[in-house]
Length: 278
Image (cartoon, rainbow, N blue to C red; front, side):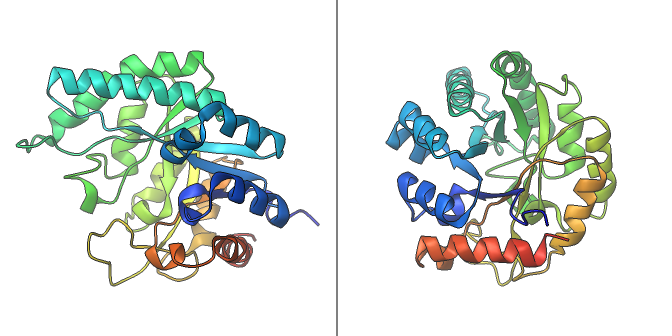
């Protein structure tokens, strides 16, 4: 029988209460082979040291989060954003992952020009895409739920993400399919097929939709199996599109963070087996 966790990856944010060494140890103990890392805790630990720690443990870094925030109008802010994204690409390459997830940025202060913001993302991708590809890294545009369009990401649908990505070679720019952000969109299944046909699915991430949303909204993702999303159906969409890579669980949830991180990781692995694996 195949290992039910063979495609399972735990995103570091799901168990952010664990230090990087604690996360690595818990993954080894539980037989989890993939981790999605975040830049801030990796930088605190040291990028080279983190790469060695994960590599020596035999773990695969499935993604690095996050680059992006590319919508600024001010020239100085744009230059700073490009510099930070060049650094993120270098960090991804050092960690050995081929995927840098992009949260592309919201509307600049005082602006309500969605089209202009999206065009500035495209301008940035034209600079960053070749740099990333030279280092074996692909940029993965992540569409976020529309409630985040103003402050975090003006790319709200997979259609919008693909319209941007397809301006560039597939080895430079792909997309992130995240159930939390896309589950509501009845066009998403056909767009997943479109992404698969173009070789654009860079990563597949899971979190459930639960209500009521908390104040601030950001940390309202649910543990898989606790909400409205049919995880098995979404996995079928992505599989049918030809994606065979890791499936990363990325949950922002204060209640999960208040618990023992190792217990949360073990629970997440069980939920993956129950709600995702066929």
